[in-house]
Image (cartoon, rainbow, N blue to C red; front, side, top):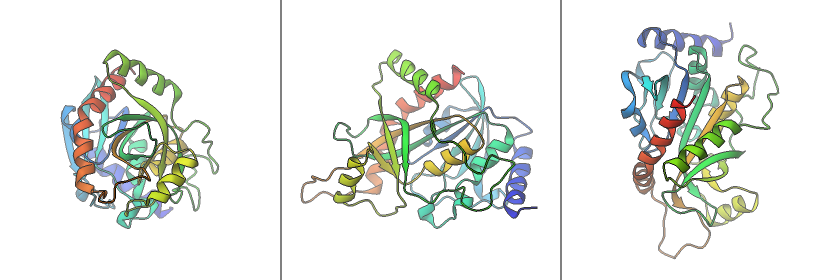
Length: 275
């Protein structure tokens, strides 16, 4: 057996026992400072990543490192309270391992979130951006021998983010009086923040927001034909016209994400309830 499949199966079997055989309908990835949505999950079972065979440990700021399984918006869900990043030194196989475990457990949709810098001059700190497309500057998680039981060798990425879910999210946000942007998310390796010239370049090639995650998870989900909805919280203005004393600060990013988490959580909850 392919050792990657064996690792996925071992982790899946462990989690399946831990959640009592429940079948989650929606998988949710909660990024930096956005773990508060997990507090809304009722009848919750928590499984720390450190207990799962073959799982890495999340080391990023604002990532607790748990699977939370329960009910949200009347639907069975499984949330990742923190994710894994390429910049932590993990191979892409490990970065997308939780997504593949959730797929094996039965999820039919994946919701992803992140904290991102707004390279679009029209974005400000605290804005919510529905991800309509992405630009990937990270290694592709599908490089290597294809995992045929998950999907084809060359999966289509024409619509990586589900148009129907995007439209419904916009409708829900409008009904709640919450302003949302739509844009293109770009992911680089990190962990250093980008230079002003890099921000300018990203804007010129069509990015609206920049981060260090999410896209590998989306690719893994789309490989298995799982529809995806994504949202970024704009936590800093990633421009190329800073004052001389400006600097990006990781703690400030988490604080800004935390401040916007309630609005994002409400949209996610209502969207899941509408499925």
